[in-house]
Length: 332
Image (tube, rainbow, N blue to C red; front, side, top):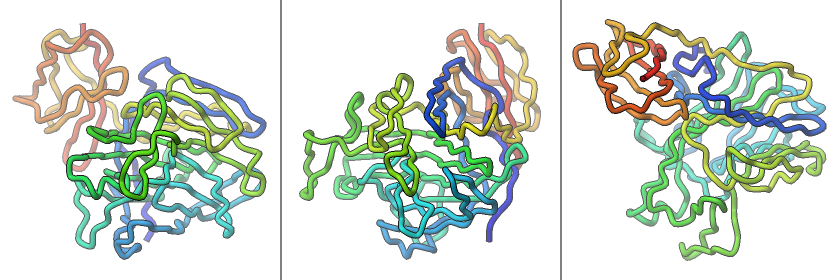
């Protein structure tokens, strides 16, 4: 059953002035720093795929989604995160795609530490949206190597006004041999070796389902990319946690979604040695202005020591019962 949820905890204000805007005949690409928050209510694909690594599923939308010159009410995605709208599997959505992506699926209740794909139909800023969340995703050949501890987290958002977003979470790539910053992902060979002669992604781009040449994509590092008309161009440097890449139709004006977060005051503000959390908050995460997680844990007597923090703006994400709330403060 589809779930309509209030989405607490996503950042409601811009963290930095970093913003890239590029133009094409039908769409623009925007990118900026935010804070990544996982779905708190969702459905898992575990019971729909029979634990098959190379899954393909059709996801119903609770709205009509405009894409190029057509309207769709469902979307198809597969394990390596390419998507399609038509029955012909047009592969028009490359919203962070790589051939080697797989998800380890389990046939018992899903734990937050396990690899999984989760989804929900939600409402944000009075707009219906569909969110597909890849949790602790891996590469296929990581399954054969216990020394590799890849954990990749991201979300694909589809809004009813045609806006599409990729929200990047933690990218834990320790000891992974195929990620080459500045180049992208190398290719694994069939024997599990590494072929450094070819780059296999990740691809970030979209195209017309009926005309692949009518496309817009990005090429290069996440914060200094070029916009191209080649959907198979490569994102060469992975974004930090909280980064968003947005594909926005030209017909959509200013688009700054309010994710229905609740904001509270943090004191003292500005802070020098500590901050005090609201009385009901029991756990917090603190992000710097670049979206990097710099602290997480329970508050001691309602206080968090920030003495070692560098001067600047910080965002505090707190848990109070079943609610997530946000605050911000300046460290001097």
